[in-house]
Image (cartoon, rainbow, N blue to C red; front, side, top):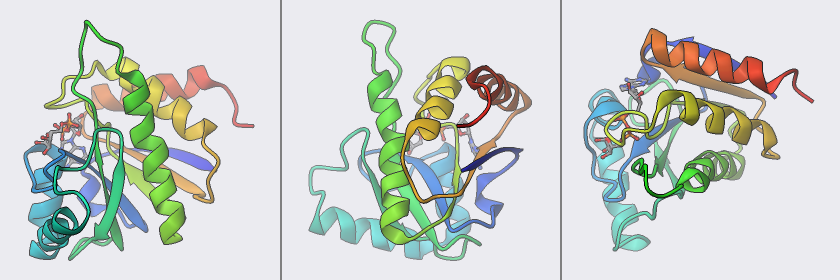
Length: 174
Ligand code: AR6
């Protein structure tokens, strides 16, 4: 697997699947979620509504991932995952790791070999960037998958630097 870092907007990524940092309602929100729905058009929300009605009437649980069409995005699919809200009192890192694992599992089920991830939970959900980057990089590297091209698409220079540091700290790939 090749891991690359990109600074920019995830909605422009030409990959098989783009991961969305969604919330359990699957009905949209701000941040990456808002950008994906805006640029991808109504087909994504329509697919999310249908998924809710058929499988997730109580919402998609934190740490899980589910795929829909990517509508008008350059990607073929959007994989929606629900990150945990950061808590200083409780260690929720396993749930954040689960977002990356479950997203790769969803990608494998689709046959997607290139996947773009945002820094899940680091915006509205307030996860400290350095720690979120470490969890993201370590989890993706440790997950068995047929995905060959993983791109972390970071919105800000600070986020990019944090992921760069996490990648360097992880050492050479196996
Ligand atoms: N491309 C790439 N990264 C982005 C983009 C973009 N277009 N826009 C923002 N980011 P957030 P969360 C970065 O808040 O913390 C939503 O309302 C952003 O700078 O999108 O998981 C959902 O509906 C940050 O580093 O997701 C949920 O309610 C990272 O993406 C809630 O926010 C994640 O920030 C989820 O919160």
